[in-house]
Amino acid sequence: MKASLQNAYRVHIGSALASSKTSESRRQLLQLCVLLDMDGPGAACTVELADSNVAPPAAGDPVTVELDAGDGAQTVFTGTVTGTEVRATGQTVIAHGALAELGRSEVEGAYDSVSADFIIKDLIGKVGAAAGSISKGPELSGWALHRGPTALGHLRRLALLCGADLFAGGDGKIHCAVPKAGAADHHFKFGETVIRLDVHQRSPAFDSIEVWGEGAASAKGADKAHWLSTDLAGVSAKAAVGSDGQVQAGKLGARPFRLREGALRSGESVEAVAKAWATSLAARLLGGSLEVFAAPKVQPGDLVAIDNLPADHAAASLLGQGSTLRVRQVRHRLDRQRGTLTRLGF
Image 1 (cartoon, helix red, strand yellow):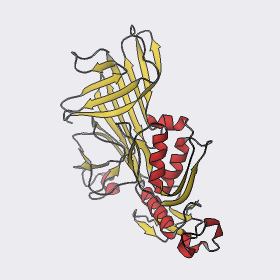
Image 2: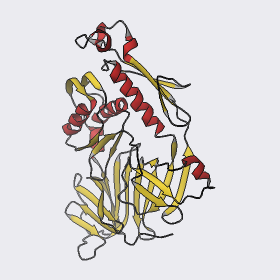
Image 3: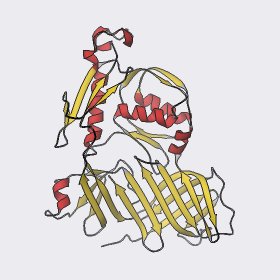
Image 4: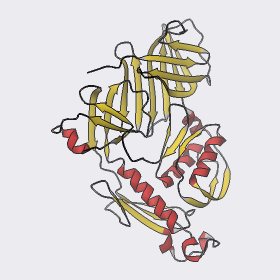
């Protein structure tokens, strides 16, 4: 297997710098782990330093991590210090991204006749975070942000309506993005850059969705309040995912998920939610992981392809010709024994 030509790094913690370039480094790095995850803590970083005679960083100090696999430095983590473990021979610094602040914050707000993305961007801004790629989502007749659920809880509800995933990028921005289609963003060669591979089929808890709104807009005009509707036929929609992964509008499967949301007032809105949710489910029918040599440019939500996979390999029959895998988790691990490795979860 061919390793990358270069494994350079720069880790900024407050005003201190640990770097593979000796002339600029002020701290000695022993180990580094960066995790960006759609399904877990969001964004986290653990930095192990050899220096025991340096005061530990303060909580809230900024942390950025750059990795270079030979084709330019890439920022793979942006966050702040949340804790430090001091030992006899060194320190371990723990940092989290902006999603952690969303999980600690409670917000308030009220919106009238807006699309979901407007609320999502405003909510992210309320806690001082930066919004990245945000899916537009359905039109909502009204929405209230109230204390009780955290800002992250509200975001998850809105992401469900958008059929989108919440995650943080390496630059620290918060994304609420639907699965994208098209060609792969990154290619890895079997037998060269692929170290480990695991691909398996998932059996989701639900195979379809039925969405119910409470609106009157489709049948009685946009000026009618949603609670005046007597016929909900115009504000319901359904969609299923076939065994081949294709989205089938207007159908239900054997295990439907039922979603009710009074802010959906039109047939167009509920249909958009049903289609987006089913599309998101279809993107998760294949799971697994891929370990490769340092790949700092890969971000959650990216599409990857495995090239040169033998036709008789068991994974080839699962992936199919020209198939891509959507990245849900990125983990970069750097240590002195193995260099930098990247694990991609699907």
